[in-house]
Structure formats: structure tokens, C-alpha cells
Length: 199
Image (cartoon, rainbow, N blue to C red; front, side, top):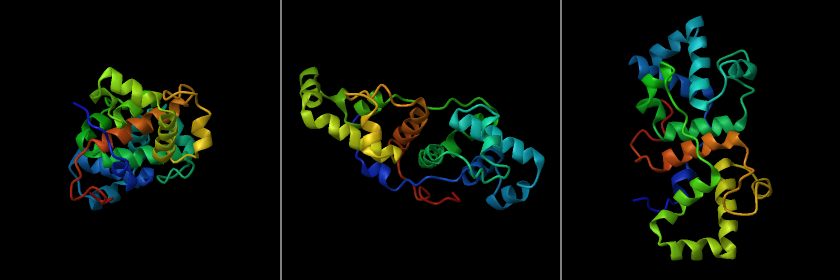
């Protein structure tokens, strides 16, 4: 049974640089310390593996990360991908799916705006009558817009342009992975290393 998700579950998650997330995946998939991973960073295989990891976790073509720069910092990576990596780390994707990511068998958790909002507001826990009353409230769509803007780190006008109801059908697909990872992070129990980049 899904319960309503509090926005505080998302508030401490920061965008994450690709290099940091890649180190976590490599360390977990090969059972290495971060010090050992740093020593591998200068090898060609590590660079190829980094591109593969990013394409797997972000759901992009393998050629795309090469367009983001010619170093492991991937300086030109779009902000929404850094946000997705931050939520992916918070959801412990780097630990729980390291082997499937490294082997190219990982599926990105994508979710549409309406489904995400239904989960966040716990609409499936309500009776049909209660859910209809909630979504019919004139303030409900405004709440939805604020939640999406907060999660995606966008201004509300941008989100508002995606549709006239709670489904925001015109939301660009590139944000579906961000919402998928955000929802996974919100449902992940906080552990001692939750905010530690080296964890």
C-alpha cells in the first residue's frame, strides 16, 4: 500500500557530478575501495566503462556522453542528468544495481508526471470519491506544479506549460528518469551513508 510521500524526502538530494557517481558504481561492481578506483581513472578501459555507465543509468545513447566533454568530469552534461544522478545515488542505485549497470543490463526507472504525482500524493490510498475530491480541488494542480518544479529544479512557469491537468502530458521525456529516480530515492530508507559521496 502506497502512502503519501513527504517533500522532505527530496530536500537534501543535490545534483551529482558524473565522475562521483561512476566511481561509486565501479567500486561497488568490482568490490574496490574508492582509492583503488581513483587509480583506475587514467586507463582507457575506465573511460569506456564510464561512458557505458552513464548511458546505462541515464538511458542515453552510448555516443551521447562523449558530447559532454573529453574528461571524466563530463563538463557539458545537462543539469537534469546531474539531478537524476543525485536521486539515483540517494536511491542506492550505485549499490543495488552496480553489477547490472556494469554489465549493460540495467533498465532506467522512468515515470510520467501524472503517475509520479499520484504516488507522491498517495491517491491510490484514497477511495475513488476521495481521490476525485482531491484532484477536483482548484488548488490541487497548483500543488502538483510546485512539486514537479521542486523535484526537477525548474521554475513553475516551465512546468505550467506542460499541460492543464495533473498529468502534464507535454513534459519532455528527458525528465521521466529524474522523476523515476526521485521516487526511488523517496522510497529508500535513509542509511548512515545516505549523504556521503564516498559511500
